[in-house]
Structure formats: structure tokens, C-alpha cells
Image (spheres, helix red, strand yellow):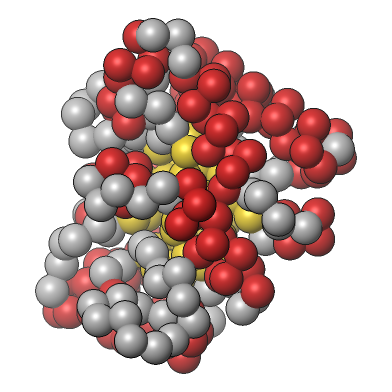
Length: 250
């Protein structure tokens, strides 16, 4: 298997500029000899502060969202042009908080995915089921729909810049984690969906991260699974002392 592990930190709505600078400097120093791929995704207001600190390091600069339109009268939104201007390389889209708190549907997320890809960004597309959906036996069905609709109209060439992140919603910020076996089963299923859509070579190549209460204590067990290619880390990404051990697992 030639897929490289990819560990991403989603800082969500945390940190002031001085706090973000301190964390970015610590990560740049402590991960410079890391052997995996890395990403930090601060809030929009922190990107200009963090960008020069991460420039030239092995940590990519990510944004947590973008608008579905390129520019225009969209009060309170942030455009791909503005993100590109700041040196952002990757955009996280379809995060469960965007889907379930801010009511973004698959069609809107798909529009954002295609817009971001058209501007040369890497996209981390998040998928995942609610607790009631898992308990009803619909986890695979939900993940399939979100994958298929999220990638609608995305070419095979553009898929090279797409990373998937499986985040069981019931495991985000709750302290509950899907067992490595549960997570790997969904990752394997989603890989089969990609094989159906884009062929087996694309399915073998695509990176599928796991997100949902990833901690230093459980990172290695999750990463050991065949179909888990990295992590999208939330709470543990807010401190170097918890993110670095995850990033340097193995």
C-alpha cells in the first residue's frame, strides 16, 4: 500500500492571533522531522497570522470552509479567492458541524467542492452518520449518499486532490470513538464506493482520514487498520502536546 498517512488539525472556533501563532510555531518546530503529511486549519481570522509561520514547512495551511460562490454580495462569507490570496492550500468541506448545525446539504457542499477544486485547492470532504442513523443500521447508506453526492461532477483528475474524512458524528467531541474495527469497516466500504465511481486504482490511491475523538492514546490503533490513512483531529489539535504525538504515531 503506497498511501501516505495524512494528519490534519481542525482548530475550529478557537484561538486568538497570538495563541494561534504560538501553536503554529510549536507545531512547525516539533513536526519538522515528521514522516507523514500534516495540515493545520485555523479560523479565517487567524489564517494571515499562521500562513507565514507555516510557509516553507511540512505543514499545509487549511481553511475550515469556504463560500459556494466565487465572490459577490454574500455578507459574512469567505471566498476561495480570498483564501488563495492568504496562501491556503486545502479547504475542509462538509464537516458534520456545517451539515447539522448550519444545515448545509449535499448539493451546497458539492457546489463548494467543485468550486474549490476549480481553483486548485485540495479538498478534505467530510462524511459520517448520526448516532440514530448508526443505530438504525444506516451508517453505510448515509456515508454512500454523502460521498456520491459530494463528488457529483468531480472528474477523475480532480479526485487526485480530494481526501475523504470519515467522522461518525456521535464520536465528535463526545469522548466516544468508533472502535478501529468499526472505523475500518466504514473506510473499506467507502473505498468500494470510490471503486464503483472511479475504478479500483483511484480507490486504492484515495486517502481516507478518520475523525472523531482521536487522541494520542488511540491514534496508533486506528492508523494500524488497512483502510485508515490518517486523522482529522479536533480537540487534540489545539495543543502541541496532544497533536504532536498523534502526528508522529508509529
